Amino acid sequence: MIGQNSVPGSLQLAAALKAQDAVAVAFALRNDHVVVPMLPVDGPPQVRVFRRGEADRYMLLLFSSTETYQQMVPDEADHRVLAYDAAALREFLADNIGVLEAVWFDVAGPHTMQAAPQDVLDALQLDTR
Image (cartoon, rainbow, N blue to C red; front, side, top):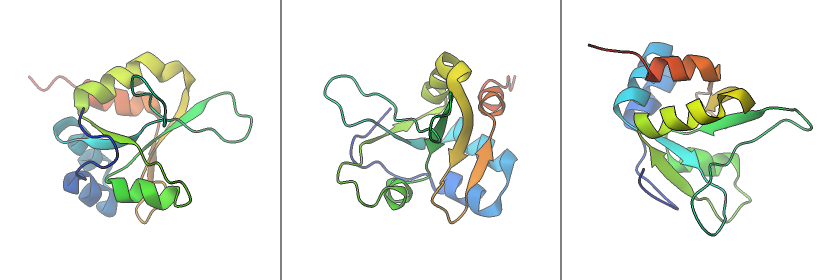
């Protein structure tokens, strides 16, 4: 994990989202990084998750760049983020799979994609040997 208020974007993930290519998105997640929003709290970083109204489960929103996250919440002043590599994302998903209903990529657009949390976790756990 790297970063805090701004991290380098993932050109690989941005290109995969632009192409709307789920296989390329999985490849980018396995071989590059993704920008993950963090809660603005003191202490250890905590992933910021979102939910619709009073829904029981949460959505994990992931981004190809800090800028695409900022587009989603333009009125907020504190855009804390971390760059998660495959191992960090896999660990977060494995620990929280039961409370997540969806994973969204670049939800503010222009190239939004959605996946089931288990599908993303499965893609990160592929054995390539």
